[in-house]
Length: 321
Image (cartoon, rainbow, N blue to C red; front, side, top):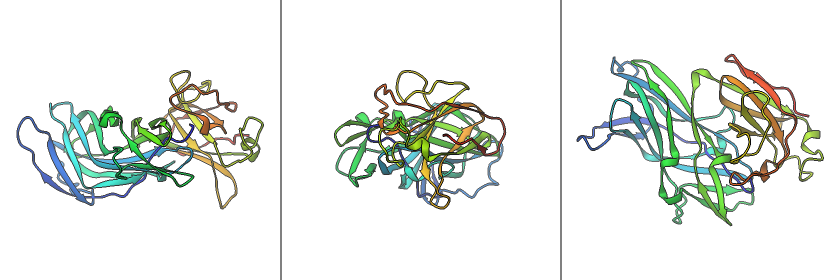
């Protein structure tokens, strides 16, 4: 992507003060001050269960920090007309770029919630181009730019389905924030946040790690001779997928991972975390910095590699050459 596109790591928390909301026209409200752990593992009963929710991020080119201010979370029980609102007090500010691979940041820890399925959850954020650096991106040239959600809408931060809270049982989920698809430069120095999120069940998620040889980073298909720029692995659902860029045409990657040198071993490595079990195709490109999610870009990929994640173990993929 021409300039960038992702987000967030985090500080977080929770000792919870439960404040009721009354009235049929208002959502239930829980104010969360400081530490986010409820520490009430024995209070679930038959009507409640416990949710631990974390956030992780797929990386982005040309950015060294992506900060997002999270004000709270809304969850919509299928059995109720009104959502449950969890408010963070103070708000959580997370640098999403610190949450790549198997890294994540907790947002809720053993939060008591009513049992049953949930239609959706929504992350409430402050991202407005108003001169206040609540949510912003810092580029490799050290310039800082506010992130703005178009029209102030929070609809893009909604994750549909995939969540069930079981009676007196802990549930652990992770929100995967795909920055490569989520940050768009609409004009010079103006960046919109159009979040692309998915919810992953930690009990059925896996990790993928691998390496890339230096010769692949400096080959004839690379736009420059710098092996540290534009290098990424794209991950596609199903086997034998013909790799394509992020955009509205062709095969759409479900995630991506930057390639970076391990300063200890001197080897160039990549890492995916929180990937559901299943069959996938991986492909390497050294032109990821040319991938604009708003356009169909003719970037070049290596010969793809098939991968079957069939068990709960970290899967090591062969080296890209």
